[in-house]
Image (cartoon, rainbow, N blue to C red; front, side, top):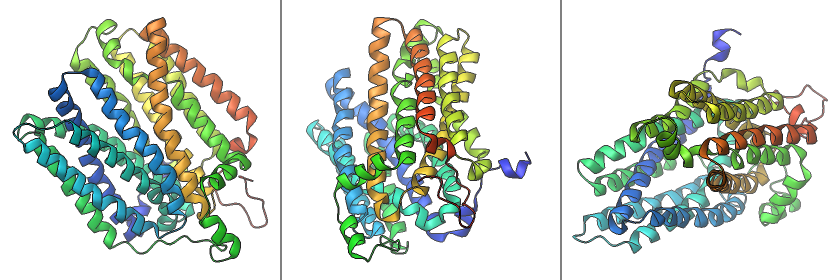
Length: 423
């Protein structure tokens, strides 16, 4: 395959001014958010000395986010998506500023951290579907894979840089500096959104009686669409197969201590390896623009098989290489899942379907970490990872067999007169 076909497609950034603004604002805000997640964890532990409180503060964000994305999906299909993003991101600036003020108090309080974390989850959830639903309008359906690769690459880059910078700020200026940087990033994101063109719900039926009814419909309309569309249902199920059964992050500290003979440095390497593989996948993702369901199934299988090998590996270099390979497979599957989801969803339903997608993306990893932790208690950390990887492979093959529409799906526009592959 020519190198030019492998290289990341930067055309969405080159050709769409509005996508450039959205992308830059998103990356800046994401870096600040990840810094804040480190700062919140450090502050909660300093105030309580309880590991259980760390789990509770994560739950305090996740539960409101689930509610937010369900409501946000409906709102994204009945209002201007740019205004919805702006209305939810600007208040997040004030929330981050409140955390900074609390951190500067002589005796910081715990309850504002919980309240701010809950508000952050709720507001992020309310605006998240609008951002996902806006991307096809900004870049065009033929560049969905390229936009997805760019977004995923920025997420992985932020995952590498944000926590490290946050830790340095905490060790230097202090917790308040992390929260202040987050507030500044969110403010810049909000200002960038002011220059993005309006993004009302489009589509040929948006102004018809049926279009109005659907745009003002409930989450149930999105659920019915998912149930009736074999492609979308298959995408959600294959995503669940990848996330619920194989999320080994919760076991990294135990694996580092019991099997790789290392401390925090090894834990850090285990966390960084998948992100490094994902960045390599993003940098070579140009081919995904003409890929489809078969490539998606292959990428999820790569994820599951690589994690199975990781669980069985005894040598740290091999384990890190397999984690990087898993990260590459996860990146490709994420790009294709997102692109096929947006490609196969009508614009007037895109917000609600994106909301359901985000609910799964929030819940499935949490369930996966809980499941692998419970299995590790019954067996061992390595056995839990291997078992999860094998179950992921079996579940992926089962979903691929049960949903032919998923296997046939493609991002290549159909020829004139041909039926839509997602039907």
